Image: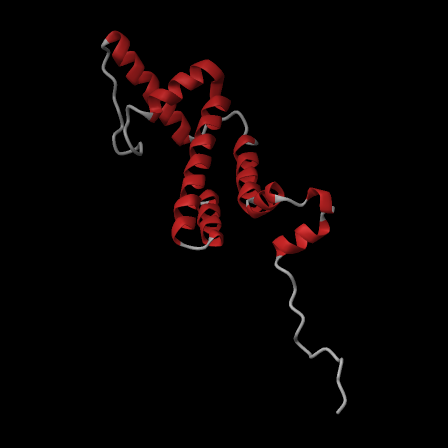
Length: 153
């Protein structure tokens, strides 16, 4: 009987991208923290891309941003002076006294950039919570996919 040392066709399996990335790093860098960062790399990149896309916008406000800021200013004016404040109820999502008032206050303190940064923070928090809730019931990749789809829409 002869012993064959030939490798069977189709027996090679490429490593998972996370393992391939770990193998490409110097051995002194590989540890629990490195594995954690590599596992969260797709989510981090998606949120970073979203932040760049949001913060690169010019200084012009969109129709929705302007409506929220102006409605917030009207509501604050109503609270301070008692003047009538027309609140477009169907045009604003959620409570017309929560986000528009906060957006108007942030606009008066830091301008449109601060309003967008706050909105970005809210969306990032929602994406992280969505990822965690989905990953608690399904595989980690499903949570990342759900969060990335949420951020990109």
